[in-house]
Image (cartoon, rainbow, N blue to C red; front, side, top):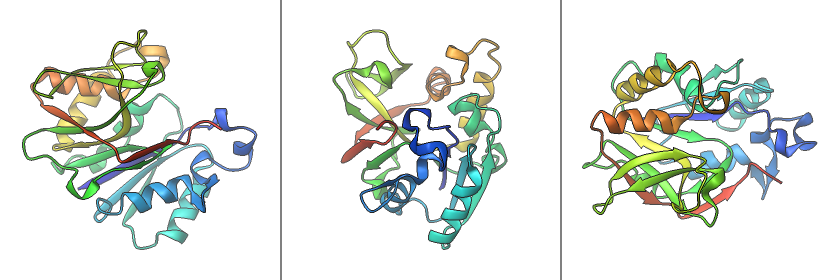
Length: 224
């Protein structure tokens, strides 16, 4: 299993704190945001961890190498902020072999049953939590059997409240890469960025089966 963690954001909503350091290195509850995430995900970071960095990425790389020297790490730079799907696509060299892969957004502290993350009966697992107002998030729509039928980024209504919290497992990294390449062919992406939910929908349309699983705890670390 390979793990991709996205850490390339500018952290504009966390200024002035992020003028001097990137958002993943902000201190909270005795650790950094990315430190908490790595500690919680230790059951799945045993092989390779690919970090996508951008703003002040050299600080992130130095901190991780110093504090987590046991991890087999790679660092990929997203110099042009074109969205989540573009960030994962930049890791394509690590997705050529058909390993299972976990994609994690680095602006949340999320606890879940990572030791049993993978699903024998599905091609993907989306960690979710019900929220009062889903309009800030991507949401997962499900059928009566619990399988995901479609994902929507930042819905305009509040009818569907099952938010995708930002850490997901995929059986086939190669299939995920193919979906990302399809998404990146769109010349007019939503709000100027390429979103992971679009890749999920491509996979669903190709016949992939996704299920959802609840989180144990989710702390959004993207705003003050």
